[in-house]
Amino acid sequence: MSFFVWLEQTGVSVWVREAPTLWAFPFVLFLHTLGLGVVAGLSVAMNVWILKFAERHPVAPLKPFFPIIWVGFTVNLISGLLLLAAYPTKALTDPVFYLKIGLIMIALFLLQWMRRKIFVAADPSRPLQPDRRLRFTAALSIGLWAGAVLTGRLLAYTYNFLMASDLVAGY
Image (cartoon, rainbow, N blue to C red; front, top):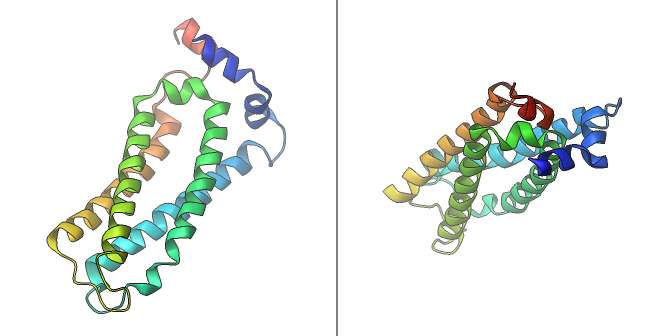
């Protein structure tokens, strides 16, 4: 628990949480939402393509999306770490936070697996003939991203302790 107290008192944590400016918590939250939109949005779009359009359209136009997805993830990671620093006790004592992180990790793993399957195993200039496994993975990935978005939103409401002082007091 002393880790939570220490982290909550760092300059970055106090600034993100308490600075009376839109450039602190509101802007970091905006960046987190923007990164989420890029990562989850483009990933889901690619999965929908696999499920509905792959047999009619070549895969090559999807290739430029992967670096954009990773830029979105980087924005999400940095903003997420800032949000975590602002309220570490809130997140790190909430099982929903760990579920969210797990869903994201699995979804990113599947994204990389599908990227290799699509661009290494197939000719990108031709339409793709997705097998059952690839279709299942695409559908699963959509569910994982939906779960990550849902658990992320639930974090605002499911926590038991906002600050370390609440944890000590047993609120």
